[in-house]
Amino acid sequence: MADFEPRIVAFLCHWCTYTGADLAGTTRQQYPPNIRIIHLMCSGAVDSIYVLKALIDGADGVLIGGCHPGDCHYQTGNYKARRRVAILKGILNQMGFTEDRIWLRWISASEGKLFADTVTKMVEELKKMGPNPMKQLWDA
Amino acid sequence: MRLAIGKGDLLKMARHGVIKVSEGRTEEAIIGILKSLLEKRVVEAILIPKGVPSGEGFVQSLIRDPEKLNGVSVISPTMPVQSARVASNLTFKNLGKKVAAVLKPCEIRATVELAKFLQVKLDNLYLIGTDCPGTFEVPDYAKMSQEGKGGERLRAALLKGMSEGEVPMIDGYAFRTACQMCEYPVPQADMVFELFGYPSDQEIGVEVGENLEKEIEEKEILSFSKEGSRNRADVIGKVTAERMKKRDGFFQEFREVVKDLRSFLDRFSTCIRCHNCMVACPICYCKECVFRTPVFEHEGDQFLRWADRKGAIRMPTDTLIFHLIRMSHMVTSCIGCGLCDSACPSRLPVATLFRSVGDRIQKMFQYVPGRDVKETPPVATFREDELKIESGSL
Ligand code: SF4
Ligand code: SF4
Ligand code: FES
Image (cartoon, rainbow over all chains, first blue to last red; front, side, top):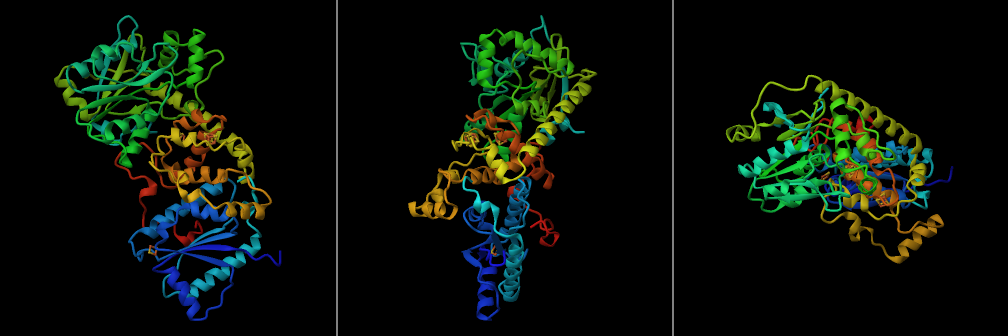
């Protein structure tokens, strides 16, 4: 599995994590290139559909990035995202899909380093897990 | 243990009474009360199941003429539609007059859930419930009736079973799976006709909540008393315990079969993606479901790319997503009516899936769907201090 390069689809909120990712770039933080970023206005806009569709159609992991609790530009979008992710993970767990491939993280606009570290860590963890078995189900 | 689950605080101030039954005609005694609700203008109409002329089934009917109440069925042994849907149709736009709906406990719980999502307006709707023995699949009942196993005979067997807390044996037929494992046979409503634990050929109980209590007493529709059935609590305890045992058995069986996504897909391989389960579900109320929107329309080349990556893909795509997303959107409010099972042409255990997964997700939020109209569904709210990322659950 040494040459396995995981693919991560990241849903990042405009006001915090997306800007944080931008800052990681402009301040030349190093992080692996395994990530495809989808820019959303708020983490509260991420429906479980998009997470699952990414995982079934080819992603090895999904990262959802939002503002820290209390800092959401729309007040409560991140709290709602958190429940949604918890419910989705609770369902997947009961379907025997226990691997930790969906990460929700709070990363602010000023935390470029935290963004880079999070991606680095997620790539490492996904490498340990190997390719996502869900994306291989042809009849899903 | 709290058995009565329904409209929350409604029954706090409940008043109780006993209705005498003459000549063993239990349903007539109840129909008598319903008639006086109409005649004394407590309500302008009553929604209640009525037998179809062929005798092979029941349909919901909205009755204004008291005479038309003759022949309605207070404990109809089928559930052709989830009447929470009907309650939604009825109250959603401009219901200016009082109406009573005679519903099964799971229909009341679904109505309460829909009220939370603003799909039912309870202002002019009184909920009337009856203890529920369980129901049969619609085609099963039609056959039972052809074979002479339905109608009066069945009703008598059901009532007798309820007085003792026994499941009547009907040769060749069983209650719907969802009913066999339903732990809420007793409704909580504005008015409840009590059958469990009563010698119902002689008398039954009635409980009236605070919304109706005053008017019922003033208009002399019922008189309240301290009498009741001494073994009602025991009978309900027995019925509930048996159903919970069944439920846990079904859950366990299901969890043994569905160990991972592969085995889930195998178990659901005959799902033809007709969406019937969703159409029948009272909780899936969205007018435009995401599965019917362009979110799932793709360019032909995109399908080819997926097929290229995996070697082949099943068409239409997204069977797994359909079930998982339906769950992630509404499983916290699944009240376990089993209408999804009844609607599935492939006879898949959809309700067992939703109930067994739902059970744990609902517990995550200490939420009991249909319990109290004042509670907010987990998907519509949050707590600031929950689900910490550091806890490892995200
Ligand atoms: S998922 Fe099935 S059992 Fe649950 S509320 Fe919907 S129809 Fe009823
Ligand atoms: S009703 Fe049955 S076959 Fe149709 S989509 Fe639902 S599970 Fe699949
Ligand atoms: S705007 Fe960043 S999470 Fe809502």
